[in-house]
Amino acid sequence: MEGESVTLKTDLIKIHEDEDILWRFRNETSLIAEISRTVAIFFTYNGTDGRFRDRLKLDNQTGSLTITNITSTDSGLYKLQISGVTR
Image 1 (cartoon, rainbow, N blue to C red):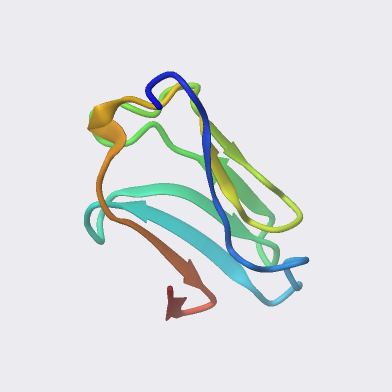
Image 2: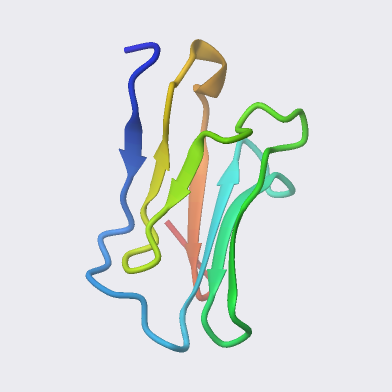
């Protein structure tokens, strides 16, 4: 499994104009990706320790997040928030 890619899915077919997507890793303050169509935001972040540098791919259509070249340090809880609803 190490070195492979994993995709975390949102189960959305298409993000609507009024939906915001936030992906967090391990705790509420570690934002690693976000999409907000209302204010034209589409970003991935490296994480507080830089662990995700150049390894995150965010699907602009569905909000799904792909982590490439995974390692054991990537294990943990990932939280998805869509327009205020945590999944």
